[in-house]
Amino acid sequence: MVSRENRLAFRGTLVVAVIVGCWIAEVGSSPGRDIFVNNEAGDDAFFGRVATPGSTVDGPVRSITRAIELAQPGDRIVLAPTKTPYRESITLAGQRLSRGILQDLILDGNGAVLDGSAPVPVDAWELDRQAWQRWGRAVYRFTPEQRSHQQLFLGDRPAKRVFVTNSSEAPPKLEPLEWCLFEGKIYFCVEPDHRPEDYPLRYAKLTVGITLHHVHGVTIRDLTIQGYQLDGISLANTAREIRLQRVVLRGNGRAGLSIGGACRADLLDSLLGDNGAAQIITFPYSELHVFNSQVLGNTAPAWVDKGGRLFVDGQEKQGGLDAIEPPSPANSSNP
Image 1 (tube, rainbow, N blue to C red):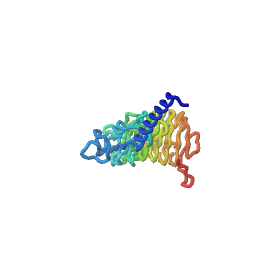
Image 2 (cartoon, helix red, strand yellow):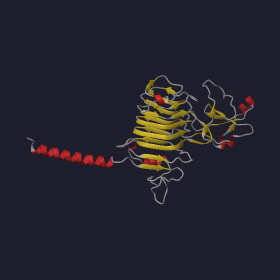
Image 3 (tube, rainbow, N blue to C red):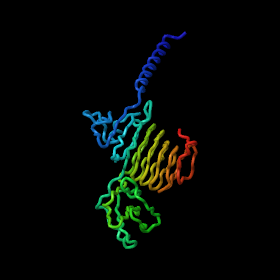
Image 4 (tube, rainbow, N blue to C red):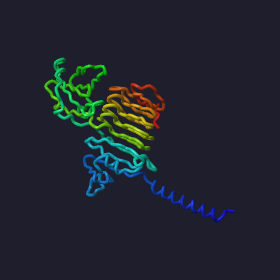
């Protein structure tokens, strides 16, 4: 026979369970909020609740940084794909920027571009007189703030780069519109009767596009990330259950994607190329799964192995790769 004390304890437990169940049903009955970002028409004084600016403060915010300040677990940050690149460096860190009850925290680029480059100041260029004397070509040089890795853009695309070996004692011969990085300086060869200010030249000013650490359950999708001095995306420390889908990581000084520090991520339906030292770098204790993606070995190896584990369409690889090609449609193994 059940005692009165046990019946009361059971009823108390049942009441708590009902309350918790109702709370979960109420909170989890819909996905997280949408936070809208528009870097042309938005305002960081707004709340980002609607995509179109209006007469209230509910309109889109202007920066991704502001949207991150407003975000909670499971929210979706929605970028407007404007004609202007988003020129900022962002960090996703901590439980607040992780998975919610029903969905990941999502950064939805909608085809937007996140760009870390800046115009080369016109007065920063100086003529390399030795190049003129040796080859009869007008080569100019300037010293960027960040010198270990760099990138030069001609318009919105990486300019053609000539790589310099560590043993080189002088810059290599450059053809018109080619550039190189030598002893921390960017060298650029102009066309006859031209000067650097005749070209829309940009260099990598910001360090990393997106840094993730101490987060779990994050999706980044439909976003191009380019022009950063180090990496387009860096999974730095204990970023787990990260999903990078339909991203383009190009023209960054070191790598399109770097992963280390007990991080685990999936890269799906994506394109990487034109990065300086590697398209992908893996560091110890990391795990990266690549599905149906093209990783070009055009300017640097597709994968530089510095530790960690890499799986391509379900098969573990070792020792670095020159290129990664997506499987044929018949053999696709996307999760």
